[in-house]
Length: 221
Image (cartoon, rainbow, N blue to C red):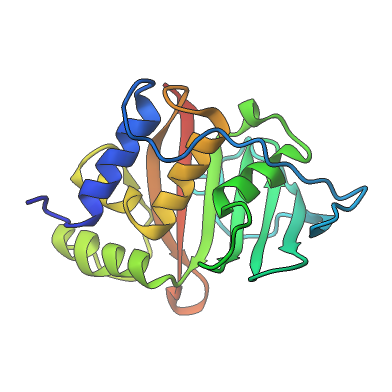
């Protein structure tokens, strides 16, 4: 049995689908979903405004070549069970700051909304980093806090950022609910065998380090 069951097994399957063009069984096809903020789409409310980067994160977390000016974007469906995406985009980077999708919804998935948000202003081929901020989602926190960090002897929350490359721990993080969302985004954006998630960075910020964040580094296969 994998060390981090069931996350590790899920993450290993996701990594194979991402990195191998002909790996069978991938459930995440390429997506054609797109929205604009001008004009507004019929089925979605879309806001788009400029914001400035003002975090105290150092260049190990927010690389120096990323922009200070970002686009704050919100996408919400107008009808049906609630679906919402709130985040920021800039050349080379996308932030998922708040996401919600009812299990009863037939609307596009969060991975597809992420692709649509970034493509409003930038080419997908320019994307290098995906951040997911202020994570309180139970499945992901449990894996990071109670499994990976505890096994590795890391304090939680930690004042240090941790870099994970392909390993048992990497696969476990990729197999969490948040990791699965980013993996599905890579697959729906580029398909299989085009891009890979090279590193996952976990780190905390905020007063008393109460906020867990994750960064996923995207590279060519």
